[in-house]
Image 1 (spheres, rainbow, N blue to C red):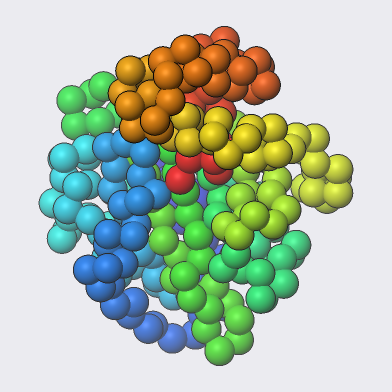
Image 2 (image 1 turned 180 degrees about the horizontal axis):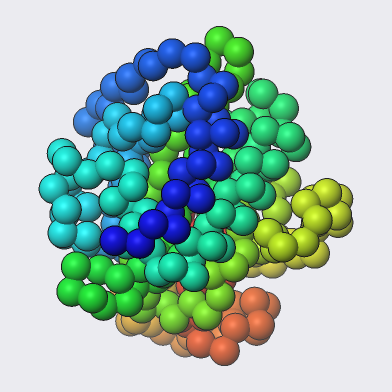
Length: 265
């Protein structure tokens, strides 16, 4: 088991745990579990991390299917240990950027309005390489406004052939200002002040967004036409226009870009 994950754990302890003075468990309801699954675009698992001591207040049973670990026994260290060594180095830099965004850039009222998105690669229980999409968002703050609980969802997006796992996006959950593909190796303040990309919501029409959601689920033009009450020709025209607007060469690239832009939850 690689030990490089200690760097990520140290960052979490120094930036979060040392500031949360007492342990408060997070109670997960059945409705909450259903809600969390809506954010998962593929085979996935999710957990609630208690930043007081980096314990898992909850983890979904689906982690066993992906990582071959008993969900009642797994800790955050086991979850980090499956990442490739080179990805762990990237994760350290990403976590520093994420901390800057949530704890320096945002006000305390804005903390629960954003989610952070990025990708990383792991080796699964059969030694197969997988690309995982990680989405994380703040659930609660303590009396001193320190982040206390976070929800994190890991989804297998290997089929999308995502080429880069270096960037981080911060997506506003209520159509506010979002920040796309930030580089952890570049000055944080410069990228925040001068965002280089705009949301795909601004580029695509409402109908095109609906088509994208069906394409992300693997449906063909016939299925989409039937469920959106359109002709096959119209669906194909929408798909062509979507690829042109997003500058994507195929549907897999399109879906990957939409995931990282928060268009697909």
